[in-house]
Length: 265
Image 1 (cartoon, rainbow, N blue to C red):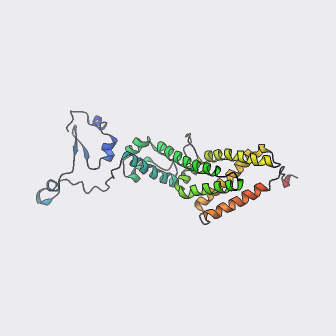
Image 2: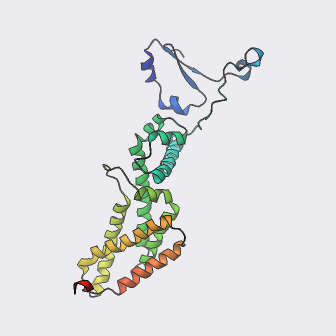
Image 3: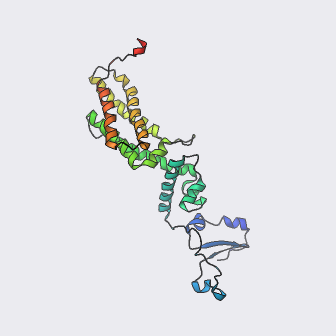
């Protein structure tokens, strides 16, 4: 189709992201003041005199894979998660994401509006996966020891199955974002643990008002061990969990109602 005369730069606005990136078997050419969509010629017409090829699209170095919008979006999420985990938010560029996906930059902008939008989607997915896992563990039993074991295993299970996602949550992030983060997830978990500890303290001689403090310490300990195990995989998951439970459970069982610092006595 030949369009009426239009300024060449104005014609660029007529091209959609699909024209620029997704339509691999069509070459969009800007010639003079018209835009023509030309499909590859047949082998017979492709060959000129003496068998020399006049126009050949088969030698394009990187042919992009045709994908549906949903599949392309998932591909970009997977690639973005891997790059953000390895390099961090600031060090990862839209150009790098697009190059890894073998698409042009407009495709990334079309799906996510930019690097920040892609990052937000990834963080939101990981936060939801982690919250779901941890909350399920906190509802698994009414026995404190079982809850502690299940919560510890839930975090380690998440780290094992979502390694890149966990790295994204604990790495650097945009300063102006209002997204969930690993610390916010742990804060939410601590709030739930707080009520469990308060109930246990009421049965003993410990002031239930101290439950928020102990909840933060308990969740922080488990979270820090999880970050350590992320890179130190020499110990098996169940072995790490057993040691965490050993320290926490035996420590909680032997809490003193009014602890004192030796150096202050």
